[in-house]
Length: 270
Image (cartoon, rainbow, N blue to C red; front, side):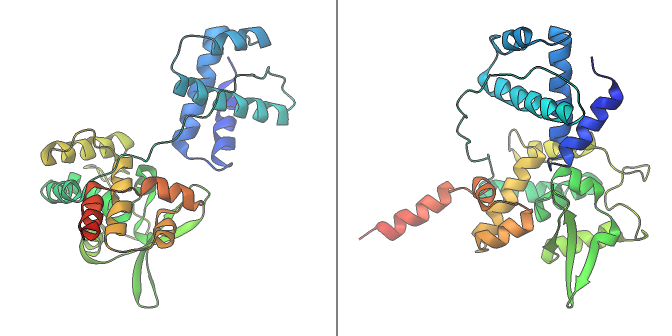
């Protein structure tokens, strides 16, 4: 098994590519699993590892992690065997989002949940990833040309701006009240930076109250994207607010809902 220090450097390398901290954690876990399974890896043992009867999607992800590990080690003069496992890419599906009625139901549920609801609202009204919401500070609330914005860091380290209006403005006022500029927007009951499991738990609780199954932070991000589109915001602006480097990524978040199809049906009537 590689030394923990080397694996930590690997995680830093992944984030610098850039990729999210979640991707880094998963890649490190995948690399550890390979070493745990095959011991000191050889070309033969790596081939046998990927020949196991495991789901194709998982194999593809682990293969990506291993190729990144090989790239990382090669740069440091460490020899590790490569993998020739290269199946056809699985077509990506549009991310599960929220219909208008579901989005509003979750919004109402969050408004009834007190401090836990504030967590859900921040995700719903900004499209932030959960790790971005955890890092957001009072100082990230800025005023530019008399307009208020919330700054967020994208995966590549680029900053983006989310307009602070309406319900979000009300929420921000609650979150910054009595705090200094260095404080985090989201704190736990002991005034410590909130942890990921608290965010996931709050989102699931809101989903349960709203009657929306399988609700998770990233689904709220997709829901926010669709909400903006229903409001008439153009796709390029949505791309900027979500912090996507590629317009193609934004389009995967933004889907055609049943409500959209009903509207098209009405226009097709002669």
